[in-house]
Length: 300
Length: 230
Image 1 (cartoon, rainbow over the protein chains, first blue to last red):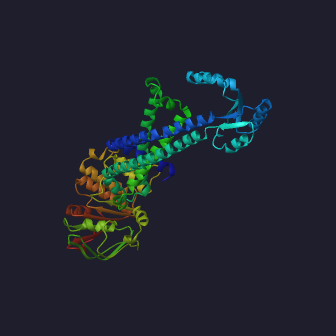
Image 2 (tube, rainbow over the protein chains, first blue to last red; image 1 turned 135 degrees about the vertical axis):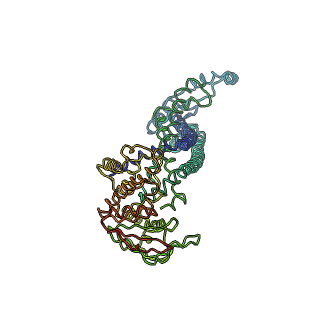
Image 3 (cartoon, rainbow over the protein chains, first blue to last red; image 1 turned 90 degrees about the vertical axis):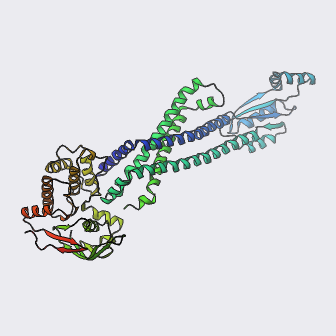
């Protein structure tokens, strides 16, 4: 039998088996859908965190405070030094008068400044860094600090590291929980598919007794598992797309909903493709594990 | 296929001795009929020949090979040339008559161009024209038995094992089926058939000219019937 004929047989038989065992097929589709819905939460969260971190790194700034003795020539020298570094996107001088003006917008600080009677602030540079430059700035900071007219450099290293670590932790927790959910679902899907196989055991035995090769017995069944996996994934994709289109309008912008809605279309597409791939794996592995049951292996 | 069996003994788990030191030989292309009463063990012999029930002791060679020493792969390959009509080898309930027969062609690696027409012709010859699209549940038991037989013959097996294939068939259907067996036998297939219908014996004697080997199974012994049809 030619390969296309074999393929045609497998595709048709697998599809017909899904229809013949409608009840069990629906059960598998629902289980896969429930699992993927939970997994999509972790996948979505991971993408939101990626974006939040990416956007934070794009806006990452450093402030270089100068000593009160710094003069125009010092400012020029330090600005040149900063702009020479490839990680620096732009440098803006904030004079102590501008800084004071900004501070006095806060009434409490305004009162404190009035009590002092003079401007306690110094000139500073606001340095905007390029994307991904935030990870390692220690050498740049120490080079700037060597200048005698530089008093302090603040770039929120600790805050940055905390955000990075929390993101990493969230990813790991998501991965472990997602993996656990996936394995549990795999067990349930496999058990349900085993029931479907058990319901058709007489046909399976008949095929074996008639000398049907392994591919005729296994391939339609594996294809059936994949179809049911796709079915479950498709349900989730439709639900998520409905949520995406409806939630932005219906739900108030709180609890990070707006962050989810702000994900670019490519991320949603990526999420849907990932879910379809996971559905395929879940259905295929579930069917494969069902075929590994002892009573099936004993049928020759 | 050539069959040779020596000192065959089969004791069922219940302790009943079905075969007792039996001898049996069927040359390639021969037609053998095993006669015997109900529960005499005819089905057991055919299952042993089909590789489905290992004899308790003795030697069974088919084409000089011990089929019970085959690996799984070798057994599947061997089964490609064997057709079986066993009462428990039922039709697939979810497939149509045509799909049931087609399945065997695929399973035996005999699928090819013109198979649809070949199936239609075979069904027509068997008096089942117009039943190709029927589900097994829509057939009478006689029609189901006829389809089972056609399914086992469609790929022209080198060995056909038929366990009481005429049971439940009317005279006309019996005659048609026996004619189909003879046609298959003429193409070189070895046929071993069991029956307890003595009416079949007399009908066959009248109609057949080529030699048929008649064997009677009685109390575990296989004995040639005194008169072979010639």
